[in-house]
Image (cartoon, rainbow, N blue to C red; front, top):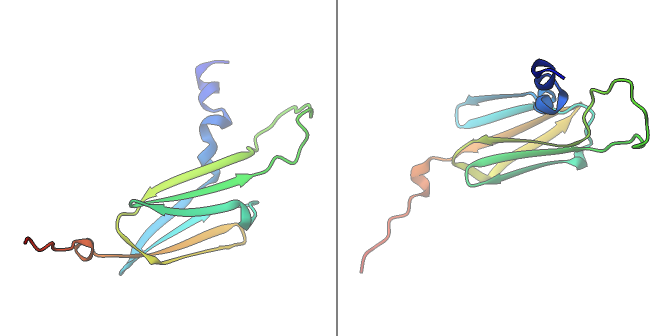
Length: 120
């Protein structure tokens, strides 16, 4: 296998199926992800320390002893991480319908997270 074939291999393109659009409107971030063929219960969205993690698992429904002539579809775990900064953790909404995951994140002013400490 030459180098061009190696980097065109599906292993290096796993996120190609996990396309995302992110836009900002007023006090909101909206993230739209294409996740066709996934079940809602196999998708998880987590927020931690300013990062939004989206994990989707695609089960392999084909026996391991199948003799493939050509195989492009990937089974396993897909993961994308986006830095979204400071958001209102209580105002996050996610909806999955027709193979599309839509996540709304309300931005939070970072100044609201600063607390003045009185010195005694």
